Each structure stands twice: as structure tokens, then as C-alpha cells.
Length: 313
Length: 129
Image (cartoon, rainbow over all chains, first blue to last red; front, side, top):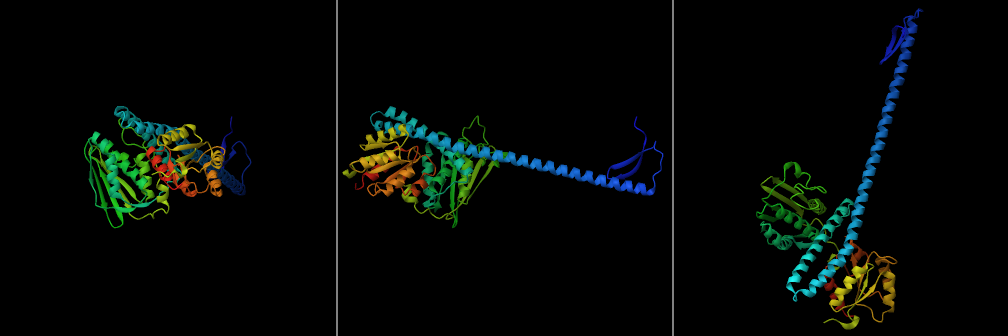
């Protein structure tokens, strides 16, 4: 059984007690000495607790840093893998595409029916090739290596060309593209990259446009151009608007709409690399408007682009 | 009118047999004479043994034994070979900057488009050989 106790000195939660079964008396000096002892012990314990907390915090920081380094390494590995895989996929695709195109070339006049079927096969290889390009773009963006080759050209002409290429899918989706373009919209941009942006934004509008006309409007100012692509389709819920420009993100259901969820992510990076901005205004069931704002001469044309570009496939 | 100087000969330097086959086939269909080498070293041997220089070289980048970059460096050091135009073949997104760094005449991105290939080859084979 524990003997009864009497509290003698207290300090910061530390209590020194004396057993009441002991009979010798404590003087005032004894008590103040004991109080000092209680203070020292309390201070030591408090210091030990703080040190323990610091050690724990430090260990947590080290662990967290380790985890985030591991996560970064995993991301790096994934991006490197995507880049290597895309390269490896392209090699057999090169042979396949050339062989099909070669057959198509020789067949055109002789056998229109077979030619048409081959044409379909070639289109599929081109589609595969575009998917691989997107994967490569993502790994380039992740590695901060999205290089631009600016040259001076007329954006209005390029929009017309892209809209022409999309005429058939737009007609099939019953979402014709209505162009409102100025006579000229010259500037210095990377033609292939801007074409990629246009294809993405216009084909999205056709894809999600619910079979209604899509308006494509370009305005030219002294320093900038503004493109607004407006569809009257399914729209994007407010809670999804902020994430549609992210990687592997999509607002529409994967059950109804295919795709890698990379188009707008790549588009945003291309626009930003041109020192421009992209934004979307949308309401569900009414449609979406994607607005792209680009400086006209923000980038100086690349020096030897023309010579090198000549043979680009 | 195609200049007969280089006799419509094109050297394909490519290690992937299927790709090299496919390029050779379509060039033959276009009445060109494809020569083939599986890497840079074999290509240098082929060029030095040839009686007449080809109109152009289609050069892959990543190859065993000797890659495209090393081949180009050695080709440029050899006065008898340095004038032969080179077009780089690459699946890499940086094909343009590779071609610029190597001072090549152009590049074709893999997968190669048939029309772009034929236009490129015709351009160089139509030059004075």
C-alpha cells in the first residue's frame, strides 16, 4: 500500500511530495530548496519534451522530403518512360505508314474501292502518330523543354486551313464551323504549335458541341490577337472548369467521350509558351467559350527555320 | 527533268530493317535507286566504295556501331563526301534542332509522310549531281 503523502513543492506540473508517515519536520529553507529542485526538474523535463518534439518534427520532415523525392523520381521515371515508349512506338509506325502509303499511291486510279480502304488504314496510322505526339509533348512539357520555332505568318489563313481540315468531322457531328475572321492577322508564332492549339480547340468544340454550330471569331489589335471559339454544347460544370487545363484531366465522362485528357493541358502550355493566355467561360447545357489571347510579336522569328523546316513531315 | 549526275541514287542509313525496307520500296516505286547501310560506319564504307556519289543521304540518328551524329562529323571531314546533302530522319521531337546542330539540309519526322519523303528526295535528286 502507498503511504499517504503531503505536497511540499510544485513547479510547472511537478509536485514534490513527502510521505506523511515520516515525522521529521521541514524548515522553510528545506521547502524553498525543494521548490528550487522542483523548478530544475520541471525545466529539464520541459526541455526534454521540446527536444523530443523537435526530433519528431525533424524526422517527419526527413520522411516527407524522402517521400516527395521518391514521388518526383517516380514522375521523372514516368516521363522518361513515356518519351522512350513514344520513340519506340514510332519506329514500327514509320514502316507501317510508308508501306500503306506506298500501296495507296500505286492503287489510286486502278482500284478505287481498295484505295478507299487503304486510305482508311493510312488515316488510322496518322491517328496513332498524333496520339504518340501528344504523349511526347506531355513528357517535354514536364521536362520544361517545349521549344518554339516562331515565324511570321497570317493566323487568319491558318484558321481557315484548320477549319477546312475539320469540315468533314464537323459536318458529321452537325456542328459546322462559322468563321468570323479579319482579312489579315499577321504575327510571329510557332506555326505547327499554333496549328496544334487550333486543331485541339476547334475539334473539342465540334466534339462537345452537341450538334450545333460553332462560332470561331478572331480579333486583331495593334499588339495582340484574340480568338474566341464558342460552342452551344454540353458545357463544363463550374467545379470542373479549374481542372480541365490539367494533365490527364477531363470534364466529360469517359463513357461518352474518348481521348487521353491531354489536349487542353498541351494547348495551355503552348499558349503560355507564346506568352499568351487561355480561359474558358461555360455553363452546363448552354455551351462553352474558349478565349485565347496571344501577343502578335512577342517572339522573334527563329533564324534558320525556313531551311530546316522545308522537309518536315 | 532529273539530272542523271547522281543517277537518282539515295543512300538510306537506317538500322531498323523494316523502316529501311519501307523507304527503299517507295523510292524504287518512284524510280530511284536506293542504297542501304545499317549504321554510320557501314554508310562511310558504302560511300567510299561507290563509283559515284548518291544524290543525297537519308540519315537516321540512333544507330548501333556509329550513330548519325558521328557519321555526319566524319562525312564533313572527308572532302570527297562532304558535299553530299544529308536529311536527318528522326522520331524525336527535337529533329529540327538535331538537323540544325548537324548542319543538315533538312529533316523528316518519323513516322515519315510519303509525300514529304518523295518531295525531299526529288528536290535533291533534281540538283546538279
